Image (cartoon, rainbow, N blue to C red):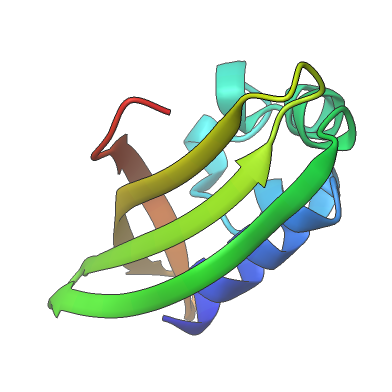
Length: 102
């Protein structure tokens, strides 16, 4: 749960490098896990992402709830399942699946 909380904290600060460091190496720098993509999206929010809760769902699954407001005023109350894996002596994020339409 610490890794997931750190990841979302990095998103709230639009810190693409720190957020990507929480992700398995083979997904870093690609698409939504790109440091630049993370920074661009999250730095453009009118209200930064706020992590509401993190709860363990299983051995390698965490549910994260969060909120933010886009520059156009559209609010998002999000919920995601975050899958983790233990590699290189630390827990890393292997997959994130949105559980709602944000």
